[in-house]
Length: 80
Image (cartoon, rainbow, N blue to C red):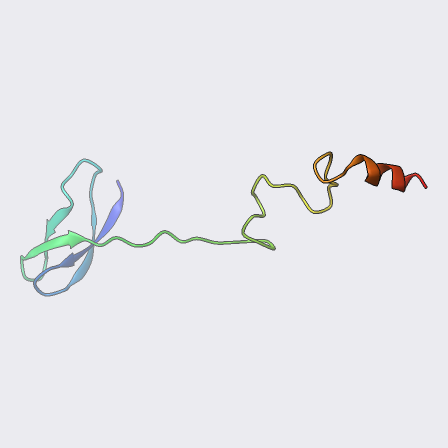
């Protein structure tokens, strides 16, 4: 069973509660018996590496481009 954090709407007391997935997301405050609601937290995001697109499917800079940027005149000049 997951543990959720709750905050009382009346006294602002925060507490943890173990609840199942199918249970209602409201609880009773243990201090003042008021209604408490679940507190949501942002998921942590960790960027590692040299850039945002490190795991993207773009071409790496060390790979040569093929066919798109080269013309026949460029190829003939390389042989000279």
